[in-house]
Image (tube, rainbow, N blue to C red; front, side):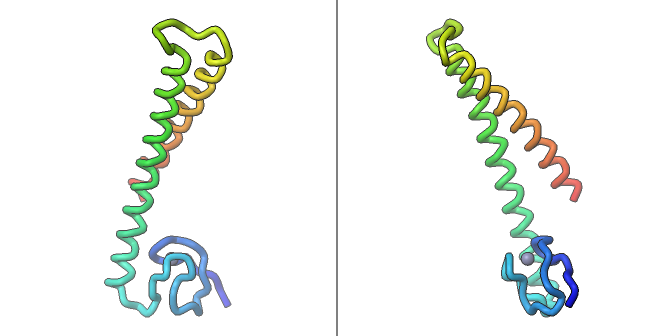
Length: 106
Ligand SMILES: [Zn+2]
């Protein structure tokens, strides 16, 4: 028994399997079905990445709001919490942008 990459979702499956155990695509050589499963998988990946970048942006804006709530810089716990949230959001956003670029390239 050898392991192959599922043509639709790219996960490792047995070459004897009749269908992928991860995405349920039927591996009977029906290329139309595999193509449509590939399309769906790619749309799901894109949607997930868009959600991640949105969440990262939200964390960044939320951290900023927390830090500067009321128009002046916070000096209590809100300052480190706000800076931390902004840093997480910023890094998360950058990472997601890179992942989107890699995803586009294939
Ligand atoms: Zn699969």
